[in-house]
Image (cartoon, rainbow, N blue to C red):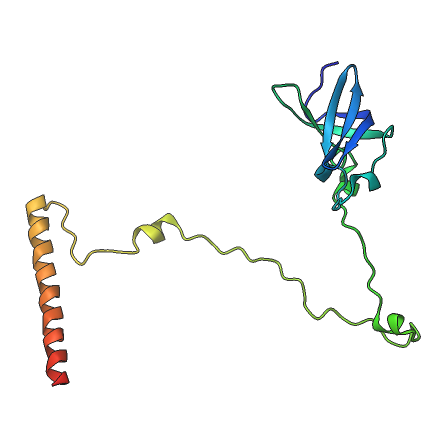
Length: 172
């Protein structure tokens, strides 16, 4: 019997441990269902969900090179059941106090559910032209660009020095 990933089979639970259950798939093949793959809800004790000798439907998740087969019970269930969240009914305030159920109308939701809003990504053109130098000379050689950089740096430094001198003069 050749197994394929994604295949859904029936097997018999042969052993249960704290972390999972072993399932006999027939034809001398067996695999393991990890505790996280037993049910769509949190499973604290696997024995609450499975018993030895029980027949279960499993889905083959992976087959390792050494022959170990990983199985899932929750993914073998129909899609509607596997992804369904449990429905809990919250008692109204009158129910818990022993009051008449019909005396109070149900309360409206206080916080509406908000969907995340996708922000538009800036275009490449917007990002590319975010910074433009004051003067753009395309034919300038390295020497010309270096001399312009030195001049602008000296201008900035002299401006900083004059601001520093003015601040020192105020302190006296």
